[in-house]
Amino acid sequence: MIAVSFDPSGRVDDALLADAFAPIEPEIIRAEAFQLAYTPPVQTGAAGTLLCALEGELFNRSELCRALRVSPGTESVELVALAYSAWDLEALARLRGTFAIVVWDPARRRGLLATDHFAVQPWYVWRADGRLIAATSMRTLLRTLPSPPEVDPVKAITWLACRFAPGAETFARGVERLPGAHAIVFEHGGITLRRWWQPVYREPLRASRAELVDQMRSALVQAVRSRTTPGETTGVILSGGFDSSAVTGVAASERETPDQLRTYSAGFPEDPAIDESARVRDLVVARGLPNHLLHVQPVGNVRLIMAYQRDWGIPCAGPGYLLERPLLERAAHDGVRGMLDGQGGDELFGFSPYLIADRVRGGHLRAAMRLLATLPDQAGLPPRSELWSYLREYAVRPLLPSALEHRLRLRGDPARHLPAWLRRDRLEMFLENDDHLAWTQTGEGPLWWRYRAHQLTTLRGGLTEYIGHRGRDLGLRMRPPLLDVDLVELSLQMPPELAYGGINRSLARESVAGDLPDSVRLEVKKSSLRPFYHQTLSGPDLAAIRLLLQRSDARIYEYVDRDWMLEAMQRPTPIGQAGWKFWVLAMWLGLTGEIAIRSLEDAGFCQDFIDAHEPPAGRYTEL
Image (cartoon, rainbow, N blue to C red; front, side, top):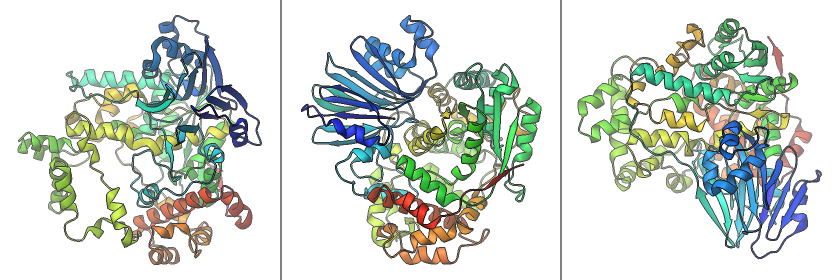
C-alpha cells in the first residue's frame, strides 16, 4: 500500500503516515512538503532526482523499453520514472496496466498521483485547506484523518437506492475515489485534478464483417497475452458464460502448455436452472484444461462482507463475492499468481439501445422501427404492451432537453420513481441524484456512442474497485483482460448496427470461433444467480442480518423506511413470488449500507460484531 501527504506550507507530521500502517512499519520518504510511506510489494525507483512509487503492474513493459531505449530487464517503476522524465504527463496515456503511481520531482517541486485507465488500482483522497492526504487503501486513509468523517448523504442515498452514481464520492464525506484515467498534480504550491485519457469519438470503422471480426480477435488476443507471463501459472474465474469462456479459450490458445492455465468455477448441482457446469466441462475438456469446480453453499455472506469492509474500508460491491472468494483462495493455494476473468464483458460486447434515438433524431423513423424489431436475441417487435416503454426510454426521452425531461419525470406522483424501501421524505434528495440520462448532455458524438463511452468508463468505478481488491490480500494479481483500453477503443469504433439482429455479442462470438466449442460459444442463455443470492440472505445469514437491521439505532433508517425493512426481514418474499427480486436487492443494499456507515463511525465495528455474534462462515465442497 502507498500513502502520501502533501502540504505546501511545509508542515510535516512524521508520525502521520507511519501510524496509518500500524502495526506494520512502512518505509518513509520525505521531501519538503511531500511525504511518502509504503509497504511491500510496492516498488520504488528514481530517474535522476525524480522519485517514483508504483503499486500494481505494467502490461506493456517491452513496448516502453523499446520506446525509452533501455534494457528489457528494466524494472516497471523505473520505466514509469523514465517515461515521466521523457514525456511528462503524456507518459500516463502510454502506460498499460493496473497501477497506482506517485511521482515527485524535488528539483521542480512538482509531482503527481495517478491511477490506471479504469481505476482497478484506486486512490482515495482527502483535501482540506490546501493539504492533501491520499492512500491506495480507504482503510489506511481513514486512519490518517484527524477525526472520523461524517457520512456522505449523496453516497448513502445512491447506494441504498442502487443507483451507484458514477461520481467520485465515497461513504466518507470529504473523501473521494480518484476516477480512472485521472491524476492529481502538485505544482506551484497548488493541487489540480487532470484527466489524462478519455475516449474520443471517431467515425465507425468501414470494413467487411470478416475484417472487423479479425480486428476484434487480434485485440482480444493482445489483451489476454499481455496479462499472462511465460512460465507463470495463470488462473481464470470461469463461470460458464460467454465472457469468461472467451477469455479462457483465447488464453488456452496462447499458452505454450495447458498446465500453465488453471480454471476455477462454481457449480450448483441442486439447481439446474442456474448451473452452468456442463458448459464449463465442455470447454475445459475440449481445451484440455484443469478445472476446480466448487459447490458453494448459500451461507457466510455476512461474515465475508464484514471482513471485506474491515480490510478495505469500503462496502463489497456485490453478493457474487461469496462465490468468487473460495475460487480465489483455491487459486492462491495452487500457486497461481495472475487471475483473469470475464468482468466487463456486458459493457464491452453489448449493444447500445440509443442508436434508436439517433435514427429518430435524423428523421429515419422506419430505420428506428427496424432496429426495434432486431434487438439482440429477439424475433420481431417487442410485444405491444412493452413497445411504448421501449420508444419512451430509447427514442423519446434521450432527445428531450434535460430541463423538459426532468419536468415530465416529475409529472403526476414523482414518488413512483422512489424504490419502495426508501423513505418518502427522502424523495427530493433521491431525485436530485437520479439523473441517469446525464451522459446525454456531455461529450461529443451520437447518443449511441456517448452511452457506450459512459458505460465503459465512468459507470464502472465501483466494479473495477472491487475487481482490484478481491484477491489482493491473497497475493493474487487481478488482471481483467476485458478492462483493456485498446480493446475498449476498438469496441467504440465498431459499427453499432452490427450489434443488432441475431444473438447478443455476435461479433465477439465470431472472433473466438476457433477457441471455444460451439456448445459454449453459441449459447445465448445467461443464468441468473438471484435465486442463490436470495438463499444467502434468507437462509442461515438472516439471523445476523436481523441483529444488524432490527436495532433501534440502525443507521440506514435515516434513508430507509424502517417499517418496510422490518416487515421484509420478518417475511422474506419467496422465490418466484411478485417482488422477490426487489427483496433480494433491498436486503443486500440495507445490509452493506449499514455495515459501511457503522464502520465509518467505528473502525472496529466489523471485527467486534464477528467476535460477539459469530455469523456463520462460508462452506463449500469440491465437485
